[in-house]
Length: 285
Image (cartoon, rainbow, N blue to C red; front, side, top):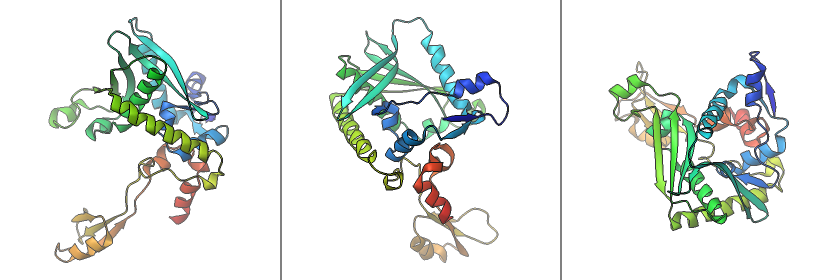
């Protein structure tokens, strides 16, 4: 990966964000399995061509710093232990932040946005924790409970004072027990995802199925009922037919089409310049 330095930042900063390739060929980490197959394949194939700027990688530096601080603490836990298991013709791997062999609790340290908490958006963390637990079980280590400790990088004390639904503290703990049923379900997910990745690896870029709506953080097209002189919509509808049927009764004057977007593609996917799906969205605009 090519790291540019448009702001002329110190070389130490550039070096800190210039990470090595995440996965060896034929190996998929727990976090990689949570990404769309298209993103995984394009990153693997075009890694040396992808260009990012050091100034756009500030949160990666902060996340690394947070992990480094916790790693140095003198506790009885096992830190940064690496686990691996064969799945079909590939390997699934995971590096666990911290594991307490006495309580059998796995800890993972995260930096996150407050919106993660507000929208209760923890499905990816639960899957990640269960993949770790599954890997560790394969290696003879039992996990009974997972705890994700999140440092909320955009927390506002003033918002917390006036909104009871807003995270009240800049640290949040997401926890869950690990059950036998959970491990059975995550094993199905792991094998299905690896099977998909192995199949997609044999296809050309343009043949790979695009990431799902969920993986692209996609929003659907909307139709807004508007009224002349009013800036906000009277109602936002899921279909044009619904908007037309309500227009007159709601006193609207026109219908405004709001095209859906794939939010991850545009702002958070470093593979987008090599993605046929993303390129097609640009040509259709």
